[in-house]
Amino acid sequence: MTKKNDKKVENKIEVRLQPLNNQTLKIKLIGKTPLLMDKMSEDVKQGILEKQSGMAKGNKKKIRNINKEVENAIHKTSKGIVGFPAFGFKKGMIEVTSFLGDKFFSKKLVSGAVRIINQEDGLVKINSKKQDVLEHTIHGQTKFNPCFHDWSCELVIQYDANNISPSDIVTLLNYAGFYYGVGSWRPKCTGGGSGEYGTYEVQTN
Image 1: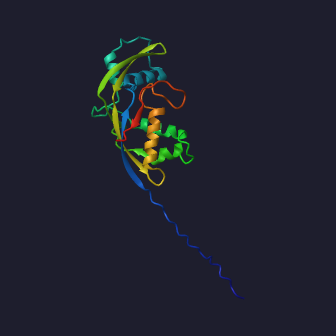
Image 2: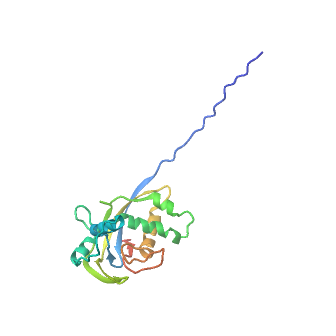
Image 3: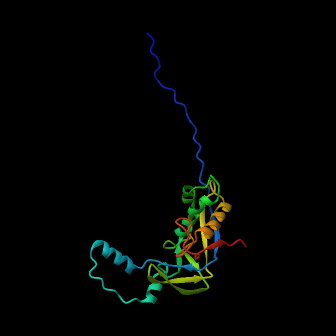
């Protein structure tokens, strides 16, 4: 009686791994309208935490220190450099993908394929020629926001060139600067418009 060979023949499959094509691009943004900052201060955070935990006692109103409020509303690195959260610029790029009319663009693609790498403590340095304070009223409460005029910043962007091009990135940033903006009272592309502050465009020359 002849025994059959039970050994299975293994088919070798050659797998070719497409390497990531990471590139970097330096882009300068020019503010078209003043940038308003409204960073939540540690005092406000602490007050919210105390209310949520039931630790807050009484309803005593503190005397407002306007200068301190304005100073605390400015985003600064641990070295004291004025900046703005890098994610604010990336968030704008993600949100305006639907405006480009290209089926290959998606929020997921931009979220994964684009990174802003020149941030310190999560902030991108902001340059401005003039700073003052905007006084305005929201829901019956007077607010004082630091306002930066003629501002600019530089983004160093790392991207996967297999899936997105420099031209795509510039287009996304220009759309984000017009439709979304950064800071308070910016024109949001979701939830309706709220203001005309914080708009920007890519410097092309």
